[in-house]
Amino acid sequence: MYREQIIKKFNPTLDNILYILHDLQDNNPEHYLAKQDIRICADYLKVPYSYVQSVASFYTMFSLKPRGRNIIRLCDSPPCHLMGSQSLLDYLKKALKVNVGGTTEDKAFTLELTSCLGACGVAPVMMINEEMFGNLTPAAVDAILDKRRKEL
Image (tube, rainbow, N blue to C red):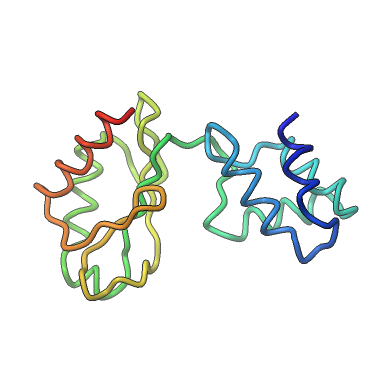
């Protein structure tokens, strides 16, 4: 039922497709766009399912598979890379026991890479959901993950 409430907040024009998809994904407890989300968006905008599917699969901000409650986005831009993001990626993969794109067994975290978070001055950086963290070290990552686990 929530899907109908979400789409009706927007005018049924194609220029609202990204807003609709974001809202549908944000309101899905598993933080992804289910086939039903794509279908209702396509029907509402009166475009083919394949059109909405292609938009959803083009943008990296959308996921077509279930994700964890906390989405970790590690920046892999050149400044972050030079400041050690690759080492942090290796550390996160080991600490979470997942590869990039994977979700922990307890569904607490999903690990993703992003090309830039716009915080080069405090590289390396990552976001967890909407919160930014900079000047990261393995110890800082441990503290952040521990705090998030306690909040679950």
